[in-house]
Image 1 (cartoon, rainbow, N blue to C red):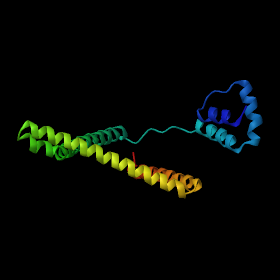
Image 2 (image 1 turned 180 degrees about the vertical axis):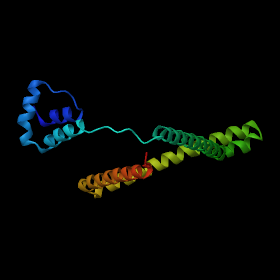
Image 3 (image 1 turned 90 degrees about the vertical axis):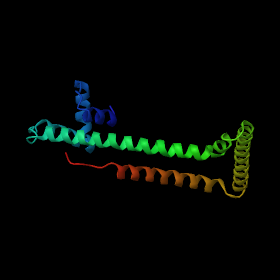
Image 4 (image 1 turned 120 degrees about the horizontal axis):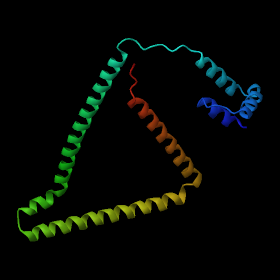
Length: 174
């Protein structure tokens, strides 16, 4: 049996077969991790359980209800803000069409078509510029620098994500 098998069984407090028990006893002198797990399991089995402080369940339930209420309020106001800002952006994007809507149908159609053509030409120009930059950059920047840069940016992104997660998680006493 390997170390991982014993560690999994001990951490999950699973029952060991007779063969696994013999193998574990022969494994324990060589593995301080499994030895510590066995000692911890034995100590935890002999610990006397105590009742929670009076009123714990009521305080916990009240705190949980207050947290859920605050979360619902945040979601509601966040949804309102998202709806208002989304509507504002749509109105801003549709402003050429709205001004033309109060004139003739031909103006609406020409404004709409010119908006689509301008958007497509912008996207095409932006794509071409990006391809040119990538072609030029790959020509004089060695592959090792690209690999190092991408690795560095990936690690930086992971640090930023883990740090922001630690900042967002607020630990509160029970």
